[in-house]
Image (tube, rainbow, N blue to C red; front, side, top):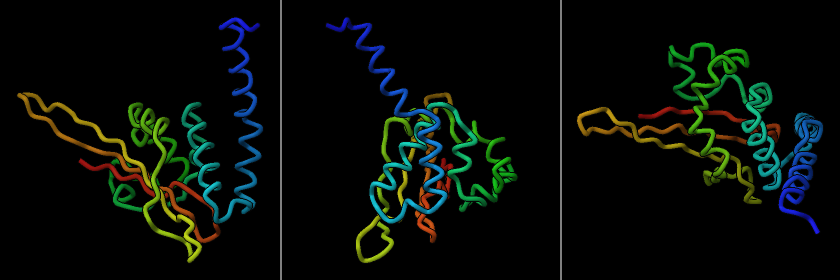
Length: 167
C-alpha cells in the first residue's frame, strides 16, 4: 500500500515524464512541420504546450509559438516598440504576461471566437482575457483587461497573434 507521500511522489513522476521538455519539443517540432492541421485536438495540444511553457517561465518557447509582427494596437504602442520581433517580445514578456494574468492563463481555457476555417466547423480563432480591478485611491476603482488571441494561420499552424491591454 502506498503512503500519501509515496503516492504524491509517484504522481509527480508520472506527470513530470509526460511533460518533459523532450516530449514538448517533439510536439512543437511536429507543429512546425505542419502536422497539426484543422482539428480541435490541435488547439488542445497547442494550449497544453503553451500552458506548460508558462508554468516553466519558458519565454523562448512562448516566443516560438507567437506570430511576429503581432497584430493590434499594442504593436503601435511606443512602450512596446520592439514587440514585432522575438527579442522584443522576450524583453517585454513580464509586461505582456503579468503574474496574475499567468495565473488566469494556467487555470482557464480560451474560448472559440466563433470564426471557422471552412464548412467543417473547425475553429479558427480563440481568446482568453484576464481582468483586474485596481484602486485609484479615495474609493475610486478602475477595471483593466489583458486579452490574448490565438489564431490558426493559413498554413494551419496555431500561434499567439494578438495581445490587447485595455483599461
